[in-house]
Length: 142
Image 1 (cartoon, helix red, strand yellow):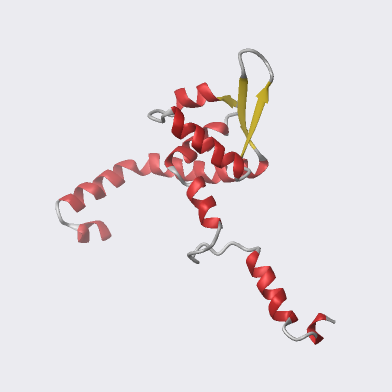
Image 2 (spheres, rainbow, N blue to C red):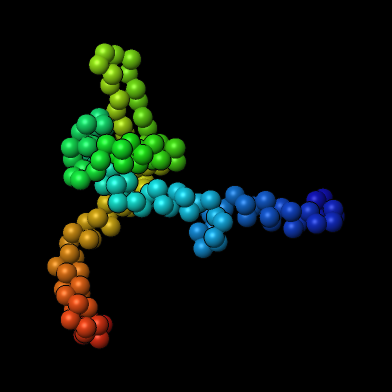
């Protein structure tokens, strides 16, 4: 039994712990994933991809304000993390399509709930902003 080996239980616990995400720990590598997933552009791209496969130019057109460089970086990060699948076709002109992986679909569905909540509650958010600008945060707590 491994329990008879000195420190085996501790090493097993540490091994299990290293495979888990601990976002509150400064050195946790899952923080990079959180950063990629919750960036402004990633949220918008993932929610758009819920409706199906899209080409780079479609995404660029539909995500207002994103530069080509930022969209490319965002897509690279999402592909690296396993949320988005990049499919390149060997045709002229080159054709590249992006779609959600099953993991990406799970994340995008959760983000879509947040996006919907923000859109539904934007008037309240604006009201809160106006209240803070006038210096009355106590009114907002009620």
